[in-house]
Image (cartoon, rainbow, N blue to C red; front, side):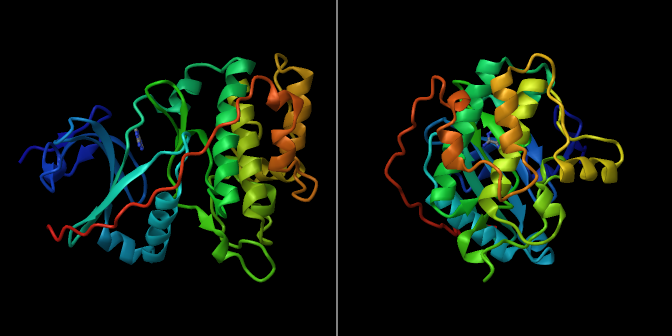
Length: 302
Ligand code: ADE
């Protein structure tokens, strides 16, 4: 059988291309992939609507000791209903695989838009406001994302932000008696100094740090702490040593300095962010819809 490749030249498992899943979805092209999952575009055969399907191998989940992780991601996604968070429509499973049927974000990754050029300060603020609204919603429900970065921020058909990928997220029941989380996770350039210090950390403060990095990247078009040598990059993160590009307004510079404070105890809180004059400009508070529950379905196929 000839090997099938997607638009980016990645080889696809042939049994998944164009096939019908549970007679409900027709699988389309590969949208993205990580160490434990592949995400495909798919069409709901009943409604004709686009969805995104995250496919995970149960064997890999077992091998990677990730069963609890996946269960946690499902329970987290089921609890979250916010206009700037990708919705989980349903979870399906076969003997060998787990499928998350997710809302399809037509605009793709925010990251690819930044790669084409930095955003204006007003547009950076708009996306930052949407990000903070979603993060505040998560934190108020005891959920910390812990891997916020432009690759996990998608855009819908109206170019509005949607957070995805709660694969690393933690819920407050994982907090140790010292009130801190202890798992070393995240992506190096977005990782808060207290995570690097491996001393335990507050999930809310870590997410705020990552939001600061995202805001910097939106405005600058590049990372605040970067170096080909990982140790040099970590040293810069520890010291909170960054410079803003010349087009940054003094108000944004001051705000970024408060967010990218290497000391988590003095770092700005989400409450202070929501009340900051730079942040508040043109901010429309986002109303949360009523919570909903989805069923866990095991169709027994496969
Ligand atoms: N890539 C990863 N998840 C996605 C989603 N839900 N929509 C569009 N692209 C994606």
